[in-house]
Image 1: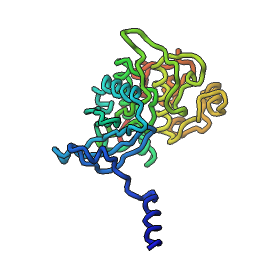
Image 2: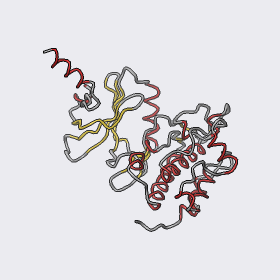
Image 3: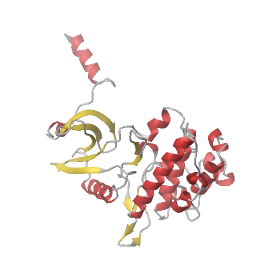
Image 4: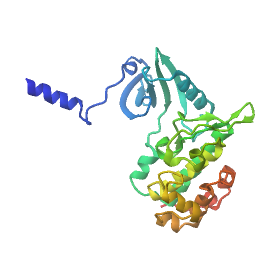
Length: 295
């Protein structure tokens, strides 16, 4: 008997063990939990099926009451609702508080993340351009709403079955335009590998160039399948090499042989935020306008 109990205990801690469905999700009459999609700092994301329409799938972000920060969660929901009316931004369907737990029902992008797509194999140049153009279109819409995402990275970029890229996870976002007045960012948040150099400084900085720099790192990641450096700071050799010579430590063949990508990276990864390319500059670049054959 003790052996059976021991094996059951081991199975319960096995990485292959089936994730436990949160009680608050089980109690929802509208949704049927299917599987766990992922886990973040504050909660989990579950794939669910609407019981009223069995063919309609959506994602529920579940933030348990033991960790929820009311102000932070309410701000994230408010910001997401401000800028979710675009095809390249994940749509939020509804949200509710159940006691101290928060449930955010979002559109389900059924082709995974850009990160998983890149890890599955090299992207063709036309697909790289397509994803990058959609990312820029989504950022333009968000910025026009006065929002900075501040955590643009492949794991936060979702893909639909027809290869439409959608910006997700507004947990680090903030408003940089309030009542028509621009506001500087004073606190660096997000993922350090995708931070621009100004985020490592001690001074406040403008918001939009942050997302543009991160988009440039995403572009490099799509062709190289890795980030160019661990941090855009003076302590990083690879970054300093870029800052001095505008050359990467690893000369990726796809970047080296594509002049349009090289020029775009040179403008987008400009270390001086005042000289960095704007969204309009990117949209008018040769890489953005070039027509590549589909393979």
